[in-house]
Length: 80
Image 1 (tube, rainbow, N blue to C red):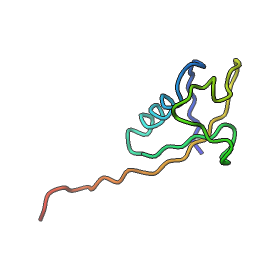
Image 2 (cartoon, rainbow, N blue to C red; image 1 turned 120 degrees about the horizontal axis):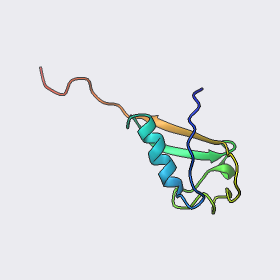
Image 3 (tube, rainbow, N blue to C red; image 1 turned 90 degrees about the horizontal axis):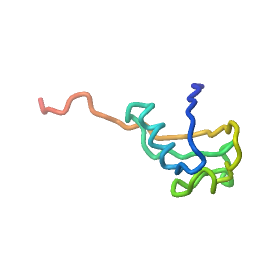
């Protein structure tokens, strides 16, 4: 498992984190979902909310887990 650490302000939208994660994977992933401290339905974060409105309203470190689908790029795009 890979550690990916980044700092965000509490007024940052969850979507900003998703975009940072996609950038971290060089754009090779899509449909990123985030979970605060776990990966159960009640822990999932809404991409339209801020971190503060998602429950991260105090200073400190939070663990956010994420899942994604890989993006498939064909190696060759020309016909033979």
